[in-house]
Length: 467
Picture (cartoon, rainbow, N blue to C red):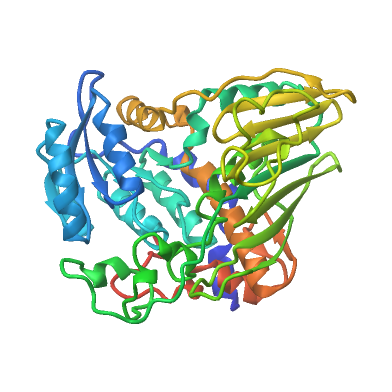
């Protein structure tokens, strides 16, 4: 990596903080200069399939939101979603190309639920157009992109919420409050579990682009490849050009919670091993992956964050994923039950360990804790409804970035963990990372994989070097 490129990348945490502080002084320059408490925020939803349908339901339930526009590259999806939104009482404009949507000065905010390879570019374009942004997880397709989005949010003084909605869950927030107050003592190990029953995707041959699909726009920044069904709806997650594997799909939520519990940002050392086991199919990303992140604290102590992806049969650790009637806070059931047919097929959650005990956050049923050598039941709370979209809209109106539950800076840290672990796996070696410069030490190959050069952006869909 040449020196000019290295210097450009050396704009890490400190540099971003300086830019953010300076840009707070900028005036809010959207066309609708001030939104009052009784105003309805005009939101455009981009990407209407899968998670985009959740966005429609979420915003449609908020009295202070108008779904003003819909955008999707697939006319078949648009024809299904538009009547659903109209039944909610909205009459949204429809777009295929986000660039035309962003020219609409009446839109206050965009909500991005597209494939991962589009997230950063769409979000930066929206910031530049004076729109606030809700961007799905992960906010970036590589580490460098996340830093660029953080800079854009600061430069254009935008409200940017990351789609790690567990941060708006009351049970998760209470668990964090308990741990940060010392419930477990000094947490030395944080674990994230992403055990999801994922079947083979098989092989799909090259085929004609479906009628009504703008495949050029779908491809966007990625290399233009021949169309196959496995590269398209949902299965794009398992290809490096578009997704980040299950680590950056479901796993990003639990990575974020694992890091949130530690109260830390980027690690100093990253190592990941695994593979694509069992199936002979088109999938490129690993379906089994063990990740370790080491943090060197200022006090000389080290903290570990571990993360594991499994795709098939598993046990339910710490009761996570077990039947509701067996997932009780006791030493008898703390280990859970064996096999996917015992309760839920998936085990998705987090476990935190300290000298006083351990705490488990269950993705489906809240949190529990076990204290002391006898593992006596400690504080717990059931799962509670999420209101992540409402939190975003409230901050759009108030302009208080500090009230965002998942500000883009936090999203960049958590997405960055996924990118670093994937890079370690793909390169087959441990990465020694500098959190300040956001560069891997003495490893140009790793830094190329983590920055824009790995993408080979396809003009005109290029994440800008100067936002």
